Length: 155
Image (tube, rainbow, N blue to C red):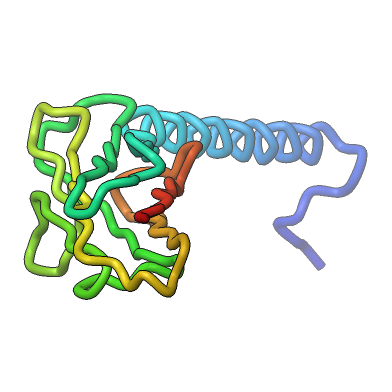
């Protein structure tokens, strides 16, 4: 009975073993190079805010969302707001948003700004916070910090 499988320990078996592992190593190297190339062009995003606290009614704080590198196309950054302060009653956000409500950083730019404008505050609440939290996205990676908090301390 004749088989096409080389016998272990024979010259053809060793050649097949070396060829198999060389091809496997080359494939893994290719995957690593492609992964590195993809991540090299993926900007890292973070956020900061100034000033905090806000101590005057109808005052502003500016969240700055920053990319590590400019992109050839505009990029939309997903986020959500948290904290005790409520949008629409304690503050409004003003900025460059897309139809989904994401923050837009234009092509070639490395930052976008969102202004938090305080409204009349309920005097029974001594202090409120509003936090902008960045969310993961397909075209960017989250850096640090990924959230920024404004304290609203109105008399």
